[in-house]
Length: 69
Image (cartoon, rainbow, N blue to C red; front, side, top):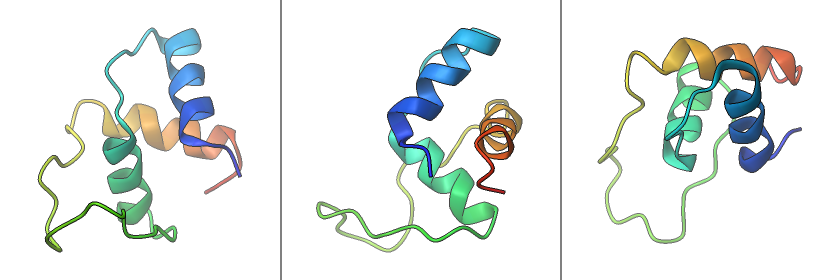
């Protein structure tokens, strides 16, 4: 499995997408049915910053690229 940093770097290099945060990748993974651990500093069950709809297809493409989907 690729790390969040590798996914973010791949998106910068291939699509020029910047501003991908780890919580965006975690939300995209959860929407795709992949396992996600709870962050140590999370206080609530809901997401404070969900993945923006314009960046979701890029993240899902990266997950397919790294054979996580």
